[in-house]
Length: 192
View 1 (spheres, rainbow, N blue to C red):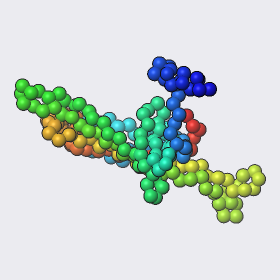
View 2 (cartoon, rainbow, N blue to C red; view 1 turned 180 degrees about the vertical axis):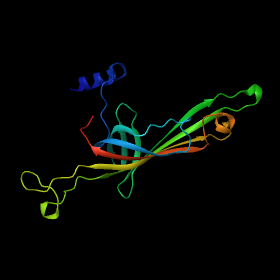
View 3 (cartoon, helix red, strand yellow; view 1 turned 30 degrees about the vertical axis):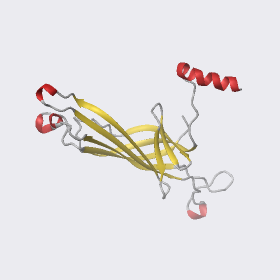
View 4 (cartoon, helix red, strand yellow; view 1 turned 90 degrees about the vertical axis):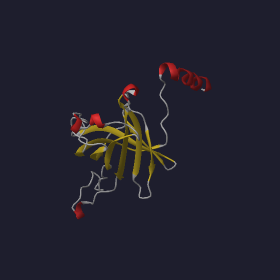
């Protein structure tokens, strides 16, 4: 067995052996996101509405993991109220600087924040309470649900010259910094 594990570790770089996932699964969900607002403007950020994607939430010693299919894992935390918060940051080189003309580059920071709450699989009230029961006459379990939000903020780094990106200068952005936000709702689905 040791040889096989070692071989997979060596082959990981070559063949892409599956890596073990951190922690335990809280659930896998089919998520739909509804766009609430897009302050950046659809020319700058053509946000789809709705968006749909599968996601799994995992926990490991108070840390949380947001796992989308074929996307990098995003680390987060479990909050005191049992919600999950995830945050990531990416730098975007939007406009090259021109030192000869004394123009600084435009670099944007894209911050994404997801907050999610999983509403557990609790029994639905039985028939006496107006609920549903299974074939054995027991109350059926409710499917786990996910609710939350996803905010994407775009802002220039300090000292960046992003004026040409603004609509007032003929660019696509209505304003900078700006953000867009989705509300998220998910239903339990099979793991991916």
